[in-house]
Length: 154
Image: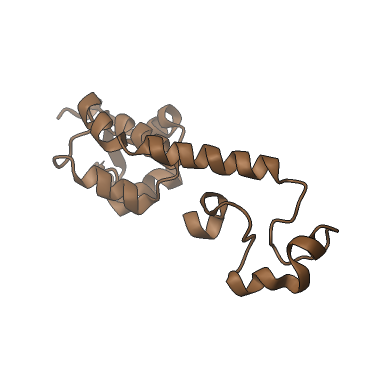
């Protein structure tokens, strides 16, 4: 590959919307790959932009970096996802998105009530969570839908 076909970190960051630090991190995890110049500067093939778009979409759906790595590992080494790959890899995302929509609707409809955080500061907490009984079920806002509890989705 000719060096003029390779993109510098700053160009990939500008075009992908990811910070250079995120690019280096994704590179270290093997989600994307780079080559080095004789001056030890990272260079990326143009196809990395498609891979990064896939990573962005997958993160927006709620996939963990581990799940993304597993999905990308099913591709031949060094190849970016094609439309066919995209369809195959994202097939199960609709169910996940529907779960998120349902969780957000549940949250929207219960914003004015107890969320099971243990604060006991709302009047309804004395009815919904008397004596902080929900604390025995674990930390955080236990009445929030599981999909919206950061500790469970991180």
